[in-house]
Image (tube, rainbow, N blue to C red; front, side, top):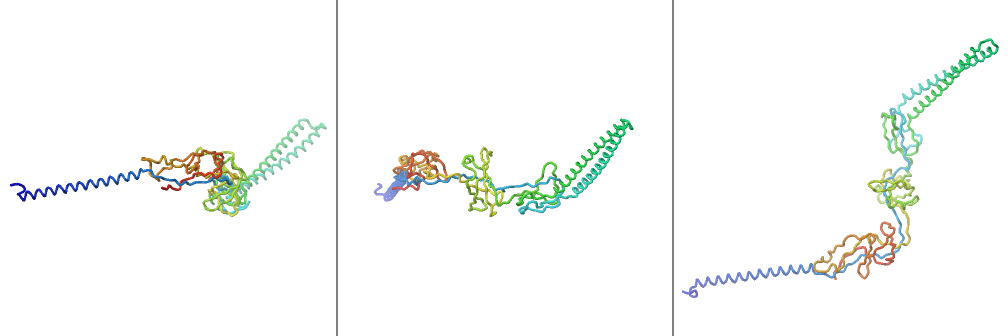
Length: 416
């Protein structure tokens, strides 16, 4: 029997052929899918790395001439124009304190009192000692008068040879001793008077009074406290003169101190009054430097009118001092010195270049480097700069002139 005559064999052969044809079709379909995926991947790579015609839109500034106001900035603290520390020159118990912080005071006003019981007793003792010394002086004076009379009488008797010379010598010695006792008594009186004066002064110092008209900034004593003034004078009150006139002490950088002089106008701001500027005037610049963390600064004092009493001692202030003015100078924005254009289009073309719009701007340029736009291409120019007002810088070089376009940034990149 042949396969053609056997129906079962013929059916099996047809099934095998059908399976073979299905497998061939499936293999062809898989190959087609991989071909499509590969084509898409290659197209993406070509799009990614294909050089594009990109034109950069530059942000520029045309050089112009204008007046420049030169300023210097510094920070510091507000202080009273005059501060006075009131202390105690005696030791003792504080019995009464009559003022507190922020109280307005007048010259001669009583601020505090000490307990004066012991001081009054000391004054009575000194007064009694003075009376005793004066009594001793009177006694010594009487004794001296008596010695003088006796000396004259004895001298007369000796001259008439009615008394020996030894009697006169004794009378002279007695008179001299009386003079010495009288001198001692007078010195004792002066000593007693000094003791009385000292006791009275100590009693007067038991009352603490204000030496100025002003306000109490700080009170460091309470009633019932004991003050010891044996080694140093303890400070009881810190007073300030009229706060309508104050001072601003700022630390001026050594780079700016050469331009700051007395009489220059200044403005300053404080956090307590944000958005408001206060006026001031430079009074002096201290010659002695302050060095902190290898930074050299010079203390500069500015006079402040505080007639509105809005400012308080200790407030931190940022001052801007007008140090001068430059008229009609060629100027450029400071931003232009910090800008560096991206690499040129020729450097960005090719298979391994960055895609359009992804070029890095690079590092910052030199502090004396500007980029001039010529025929839509940047050109690097080295210039010599002058003064700056914080926003613009004076250009002193002849390489640039008024109207030149200086690059300051990039607006965006566009594709034609």
